Length: 77
Image (tube, rainbow, N blue to C red):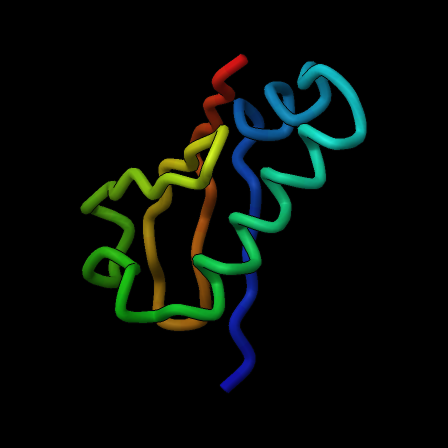
């Protein structure tokens, strides 16, 4: 199975505004972790949004049959 992660325009904007390379790395690591764990995904179809949390960040995702879309990103200072 070839899973993929797309980032919504808002998620891309937040990613660009994070405070440094370490913060972006933490968010991208969380996205990779979520992508690898299909059990954490919401029901496929793009209707259900799930928030998933890392140590200092969170992502809001929707799922499709072939991957996830990251709708939003949050960062805790």
